Picture (tube, rainbow, N blue to C red):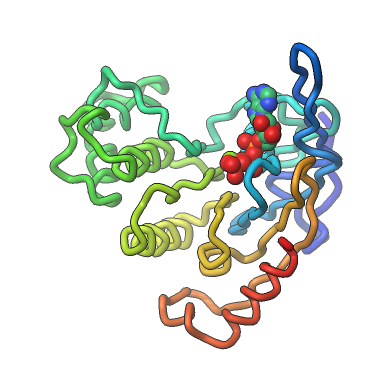
Length: 262
Ligand SMILES: Nc1ncnc2c1ncn2[C@@H]1O[C@H](COP(=O)(O)OP(=O)(O)OP(=O)(O)O)[C@@H](O)[C@H]1O
Ligand SMILES: [Mg+2]
């Protein structure tokens, strides 16, 4: 087993997730495309990390590498200090697109990970029902994906990612399709879950405001091939409250992230 060096922020701890010099090159028919170049990062247990960067810079690719869904061309990913080479149950994933199964009802989309784990059906339905309530979809249990709006589909995907209670959540722009008010509510809900269950979260977002509101730390990526351009720590106190969006400290952090992106 390969053991990754201790966390930089806390030398007594091994980072729960670490990427070491990740490069991803997609090989096309005629040409190849370098999506990521030399990306290294560490995520501490219980940390909320956000990743921002221009469209096409490789954020989704990086998240998929961190989840063991895409093998890097070079470099390594470590989960709890051990080399990660395939998806693991410990990691919950919400993709940029909801990817629901059209032939399954909302409830049965959410129970799917539990069916795979052979959790008893009544218990699976109970847990899925609770999560659907949490994401504001009570009453839609028997609906089919084509009957939902994009934002509702995405909320089903979030419930599905949470249902087996993974320690690590990888979220790829999970709230991109939601209106501003629902998005704020989902942000607060996500923080509540994160704080209550002490999860580790890595989330990609296009919204600088959302990144600052949620994160302990923000990684800013360069345009393709994606590299980590800057790291911005967010020292705002917790629990975060919506009023903080209007504080001077918030404004200073927004400027800092914006400048790093440019
Ligand atoms: N499976 C693939 N095969 C070939 N090229 C790919 C593949 N997946 C992604 N790419 C390319 O890699 C680059 C990075 O894509 P990626 O989806 O990671 O970007 P992103 O930062 O998530 O963008 P967005 O903000 O628009 O979601 C893009 O140029 C994309 O075309
Ligand atoms: Mg993406």
